[in-house]
Length: 306
Image: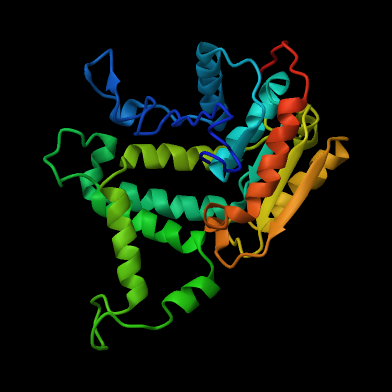
């Protein structure tokens, strides 16, 4: 995204929205509860991907955007993108779905559960009401451990082997102290997230992904996909172990089965789930072509939602 790129900001009106439940813009657990004058903390509810989309619809209405040329997202963003097309089919002219799924798998839920348990096991979590704690006295250790577990799922064994192998940080010795380069890498990224993100938001966004199920309350996944009215591109990363390519292929085939135009792209990248964030040049051409197609489709004015 930028001047002259696939999402050309000299030509396109591009909107990105921090999600409901987050901590960097939209209302979340660290926001002030108007009823108490204090942060919501543990009182903030569990939210769904559909809740996030409903908030984005409100923003689009305020901006005067009746129909998007394209809704684009990867991973949790892909969950939101496909909900846009199902909930408000007349407001989406094209759809780009990267490394995502119609419903969370048992393994995805399992990894998420481990991360949430790490956060909640931190004694400084205080049941989610830690905002009055002194600086540095929050659940940073638990959040850092959750991030470390997640980082392992985001990359592939081949990348870890190539980048780190069994390289040591210091003289090899038999101890419980940090020894290997990969351990230092995980510690660094765990602390980095803990210093910029809110543990309560982590729990809720993580849970929203677990609860994601496109067919919930709609009869079936096929029935939900049948509501979509636009062309799509579905992309996968060959080495993605967290959101494996078979999930994206099944999504693509489900769209085709509903009579919808869909293109499937599998990128031969070693970078695992993070591949859609790293190998963006491999997706740029398909994104640009899809957005151009969306721009040329007639924009109806009827709004639907559920």
